[in-house]
Length: 116
Length: 117
Image (cartoon, rainbow over all chains, first blue to last red; front, side):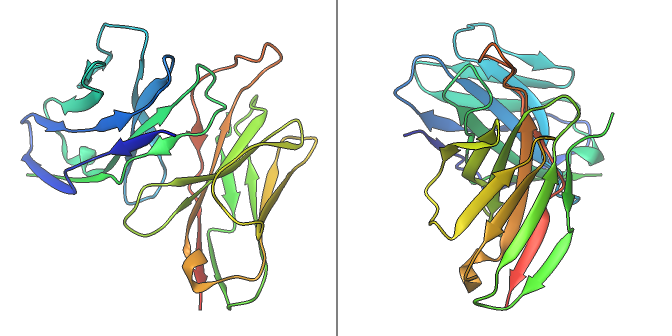
């Protein structure tokens, strides 16, 4: 079974600054995907970034990047130039197959507040 | 391009009643997954439907059942509601495809907020 742990229940950051959200996971699989999802107050879960476990290069999507440490089973999210619209719950998730039809295992979430 | 839609938005039921939630997947998707998100927690996987069959199931009792229709839309049914069933129910769609590999992205709907009193 997979487990995902987010040790930071809440974080805050000043607008335009950088913040890093932590995530650790546990899996016995060799092939898996890792994800960060954003859930704003509107409740819609939005995919922020994804990382294939077989790729060593860290994924980047505009202001969002990850630090994927496979041996340490760590998958942190860095948000650069934070914007007010980044305020939301952030969930780390894993899927133990290359086929995303398989179930996602989520962490407990980190509530991020971006302050003006 | 329509995204994932869910209905209703909110629902209030009494203990012991039954409820049906509905989901229409994103256009072009053939797989629907259901998740339960209790307040302040991360979503938990309930089950997944593909080709009108339950393909995977999480650790949920048989009171939770589902169905997928030929147009890929899906229903989640919960019988004998308990207070602990109060949660946000999320539907996610993805493409499994004929190759069996599909796409790894799941797209979520806005959810149905169920309150059991």
